[in-house]
Image 1 (tube, rainbow, N blue to C red):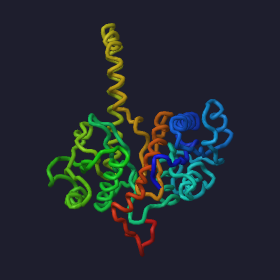
Image 2: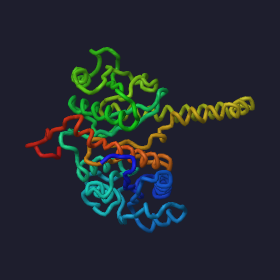
Image 3: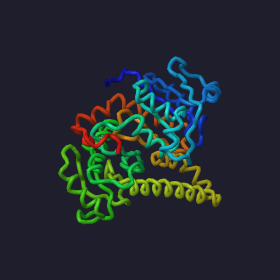
Image 4: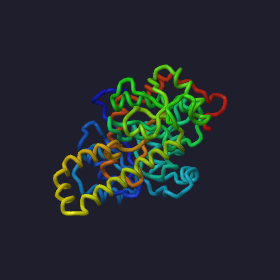
Length: 348
């Protein structure tokens, strides 16, 4: 069901992440107060959640708590954690999505457990071979979707084609970019460049209907906004993402250091502060929230482990638009999904 007036219910893992439950609850409250068509279900230890909620004013009729006594720690083996911690905030939250009680689930908890839980508990759409993690990243021309950034390290060409299709649909529906430019991450612009995976995938993307494939993209051209969707396996994607974040952190530190190094620098810093603040905000990854795990029967969004309230709020608001546009159903219809796992068992 689509529509502007439909109430969207988002489950939030209140115990996941480095800043839980304080920043998680704050972000959830901020999202709730800013969106009248939103309900939130906070999942976790009820006493801890209630203690945090007592600090804020919010429409209580649109906020509820589901108690979960256990937590999945970052260092726990993901499969074992999902199988054994049935009363954890992550497992309970994902089951709310599987049952249809909630439309989406947001967590800043263990990435490994999120990936396992998404596939095992929420389940893949029939025909989707592997769900990818797909964060939006800032560029000089607006956001770019990096797909995959951490879910499937050893990908196959057919998976990358599906990433391109899902990424295109996502950018059209959520970001509003018509006919988004799709590129594959490579070490050169020429078609003959790349490893075996890229060389085999390139002609498949050229022939794929429904996407605007523009060829290869080198990593240095991503921040310049030369593509709207960048397709790659998770090993390459995660390297791009972490380098992106690392360079941004170092540059910010260096700029601050230079401005504070002299009286002239401090005066200049005061003069450029408004413009600099706007520019830095444009390139902040927190603006876009977490990374959706695309291709599941319901939406799961993985926020950074060190997420603050701003990123949690934006992750929740991402779920609202995803649900309004019924992106999951768009995957089914526009990708003409068929069950490619039939006869082989759905879990791979």
